[in-house]
Length: 246
Ligand SMILES: C[S@@+](CC[C@H](N)C(=O)[O-])C[C@H]1O[C@@H](n2cnc3c(N)ncnc32)[C@H](O)[C@@H]1O
Image (cartoon, rainbow, N blue to C red; front, side, top):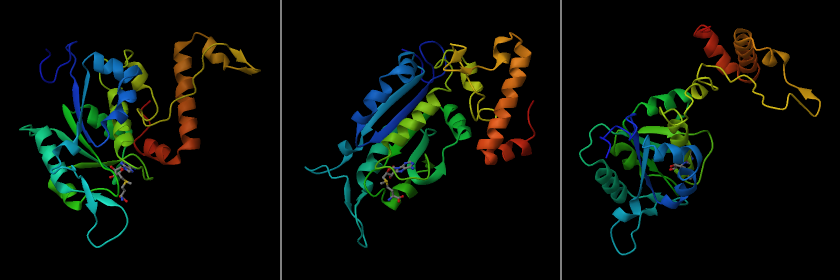
């Protein structure tokens, strides 16, 4: 049994608790590909809790109509408070994430920050959202995955887990593939090619066949900069303001 905070391999690991009404939604995503590998290696430990289990009464009701009227149902305080407290136990420093379109938009910087945590507890909303006192009751880091509204927080939680997991040491195998990617250096990634060298009349740039690693690195840098300037003037401005780290 690895120590708390350490994977079987001796690498640090991240525990993520997700509080959701629909735990089965996570099966496919957690059971395939790189996330499965990360979990098998013990680098990532995801635990799902259905907070309906903490609802009282025969009907295990988790939602109710909104005071003041209006469409849709609102998530009730009692089951959520009980579930969060039960999952936390006496853990004082787990990082609490509330998934909400009203939160700060997820960025690669935030993903990096989350990847450095020991434990994250995420709450997925549903229906019209949360009773405001759920928001007030805990020191949440409120995160949105973009300016659009999903039916529930589950897909958002999976996006966060996926983005964070690939930064955990040991998940990707080849560490450089995460550090060279879009956003990691304030730039979008350069264009990538694989065999064949010519496909339907489209040839890869000659430089990539030259074998000159230094020249290839310069070309990639130039392409990443061009691409960022053209596609993401907002990122380009930030990059230039921060001083191009060359
Ligand atoms: C239909 S939404 C509720 C939206 C809420 N009425 C509002 O306007 O803020 C239900 C749940 O989906 C999740 N959700 C929806 N959009 C999201 C987004 N962009 N990022 C993160 N979570 C989101 C949240 O957990 C939210 O409580």
